[in-house]
Length: 95
Image (cartoon, rainbow, N blue to C red; front, side):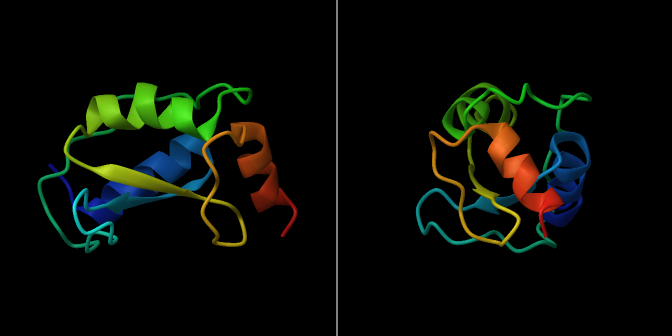
């Protein structure tokens, strides 16, 4: 099992956007050195037409049921739930 920071980097490499692990009660970002985070089970990115909400429910929450995630746009702001992943990914290309 790896650290939060290693898993955030793994998810970014696969999904092509930044994700922060969030504590479910405090809603604060988990410390990047926190250990015990299992491997992200996907090796290919989610479809571009998938929403952030759907990605969270079908990919992130399935792997990490005890945590929340914050998907970030390229400018570092939180992506809203109905935003499609193609818009999130494109926001990184337009920097």
